[in-house]
Amino acid sequence: MMRIRPALTRSVFSGIAPSRWGADAMPEHVPPAASLKPRANAGLTPPPLAFSRADLAAMRAKLNDAPTMPIADMPAHTCKFDKRPPRDAGVLIPLANIGGVAHVIMEVRAAGLRVHASEASFPGGKVEEGDASVVHTALRETEEELALPTTNVEVLGSLNPEYSLGNKSRVWPIIGFVHTSDAFDAATDAAISGNATTKPLPSLSLSTLRPDPGEVSGLIPLPLSAVADPARQAAHYFRLDGRRPYWKIRCGDLIHPPPDEPMPLEVWGLTGWFLARFAEQMGWSDRPPVSLPPTDD
Image 1: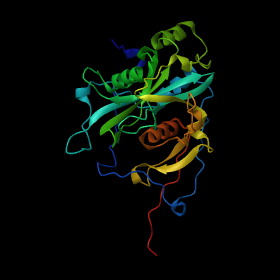
Image 2: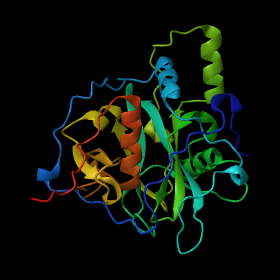
Image 3: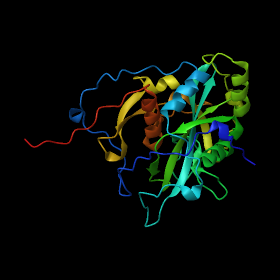
């Protein structure tokens, strides 16, 4: 039976931004360079080199509350697919220290999956009967896909949801830190012992994760520094909307274990949008220039 520690999740989610697009949205594109505004200095702060308890507290303060309300109490949908309301889904954006360095743990989806095969993604899936909330969904799916105990995840908060065209669902991104042991015990021990809040938290070994081969073909331990690395970034525009730019991230060289043939893999699409929004909300990365509409001569 999956346990979710109430002390490690925030209160009911609020402040949902309505979606700006509907079921007729088109794939992404990159507008011509001539239509782009110059890139501005965003006054950013570098991502943490390694996550500490102080970093978790700082992230929690900048995130939306985790959507822990019952599924029946979820906000009304703003989009329909095939004249039917979409289902809700939850994905986990798992943060961890690996080898003493801050990382985001991502997956390469299995080649045999019906949608988004062989793409970079976060663990997660659609709400199923018995799920208490979309937080429950995200943690349950992560345990099924990676054999990561749900009790090892400290939920920090969430981002605004978006709709997935491929899966016909409203996807709620949940941010969580992966501890090497029970997250509740780790937080309690830190509070009792008075350990320095800036001390790096223990590192996770990738060998403790056992991906389900039916869903996951590899892991992508993405260093947190990659979200702000110009050498890995390329501008993209979400749902053909030039007002919604984001950085997609090159990650094919980070796949674990390395594939037999090199993969030109990028974090893009809805997954890339979520990763970029997370980095921007934390103040680690800026946004690419917006696309300007054509003007009459």
